[in-house]
Image 1 (tube, rainbow, N blue to C red):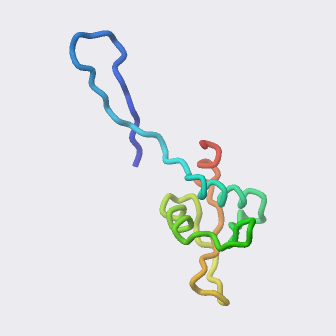
Image 2: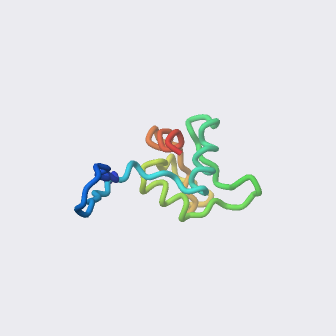
Length: 98
């Protein structure tokens, strides 16, 4: 799902028309920080906690999964409600776009 913005730049007396075509979505600041940490981890493993020891927001994780930037890696038997994820190639590309 992508959209781009095209604008007619020719001078004209008529109203210019604009067609929206946006590029690939870019990670938010929180998503970017989380995904970035997977670059240096074996297998692209993404952390469960941030640098301050706070749990990564489930919303950040879920939205990154929805975009295809991360994928579930394995079930955490100790904490089944915590999703252990890894960075995808699509996620690596999203980091380069930002």
